[in-house]
Image (cartoon, rainbow, N blue to C red; front, side, top):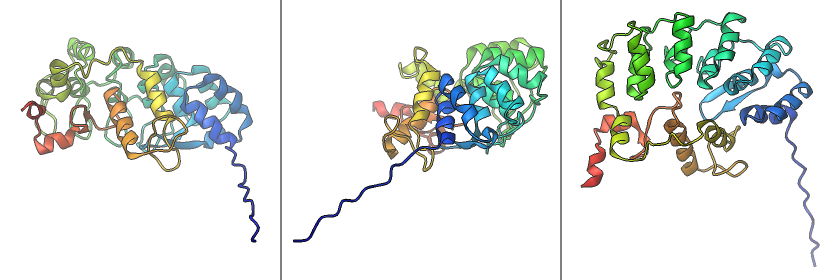
Length: 290
């Protein structure tokens, strides 16, 4: 009779660096602060945030959460670079704007001398990317005198972006400044007015309750989605720690898009396809009613 051998797998541990980055990623302030002094060279800890934000640093995540004191420590004590970019050429200002934190943006601009007119790899200024946040937009225009007619690589001004995403508060404010041209055309010949008339967000908002998501805590839901990602191989799962799969990866990306994340191409919530694909195929959601 052959004897059975017992195979003992080595105990897998998570490095302090990975634990620290995960705490920053998930917005766990106290845990992040306690782990920070324990890791070596925090300025070199970088991972992929989601599927597309590669080279994301602790400083980027701290700014996104609006942790001003942690941000100051990362820059002054741990030698993080306030001008560093992720792989999408998005500098620290973009991350602060994405989180809607005027105080951290003011620190970066006034103390660290970050340029609010710097562009990412899409030619977008931070004003283009802050179009969801009226306080950020007002700060950049009123206090920092950012040029609201600057165009991105598609020839679109911030007014084009606000019109496409139907952000009425920002639209009204931009027009009230008298510094935006509502008839300016992008490189495809589209004006902000045309984008506002034809964009799918407006159509869906008027035709169903699908886009009535104002009651959702966007920050907490975004944190949950990002916590389900696989930092090494990519993809999303149904809950943190579970194995990723293509379905929840699709749901995660669609959810981030519907929550207003500008780094993901717009996802049509009816067809669950990128909006640029819907436009290229000339699909109409009215077809679903036939």
